[in-house]
Length: 273
Image (cartoon, rainbow, N blue to C red):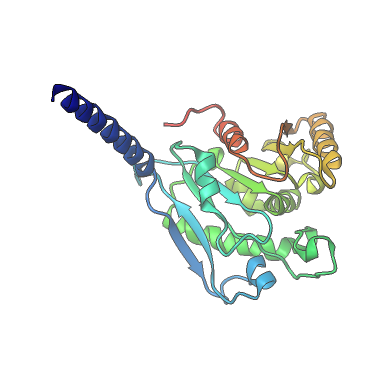
């Protein structure tokens, strides 16, 4: 009887501890919030253009559960690849933040037009898409900043994967004043290195850039690795803050290890809670 009671008590404590741990894990962040935009506010998103979807595009963000209006927080914005979905991918932003005290958000993608005869069936973002992309992001971010104004710009970052990295590269290389004024760090994963230019100029010279490329062989892999290293070496000569890294045993993907590396870099070694 005593043995059964002991087993029951141990089991109860283990299960309760697991439940407490799970509660602690999920309670760090508040609920995901959504700001929807009508068609007369912003252009159609790349997702809507590519899929023919008529739904509204939206901006997603999430505050830490301990959020206070009296305090300033870094903002981490994630821009996904492919067509960007209707509202980006907030889960990846949360994973990258990894329980650090910040605000996370995600943006969809925008493009001037789609030519399905182009490589990637017209999805790949380029410099000709800058006017549409810049306008849409300014409208979306402006509405967000009115709701959540207490942002620490000097510690804020944008992270892009694949086509999202292309979008960020186009914005910073076009020296978009709105974006450069609100974000200090930019991480480009698996793309964007071919579109990074003029980083030695005054608007971008004091910004931080991290280029991450996987090492698994596939189409254009060696070119990406060489290009990222070349961007790093050439602009470091002029004093720009650019770093490139190779992700081992990684293909065209955003792995957990990659997310952890990004979070450590963005927050300059600040440990998660």
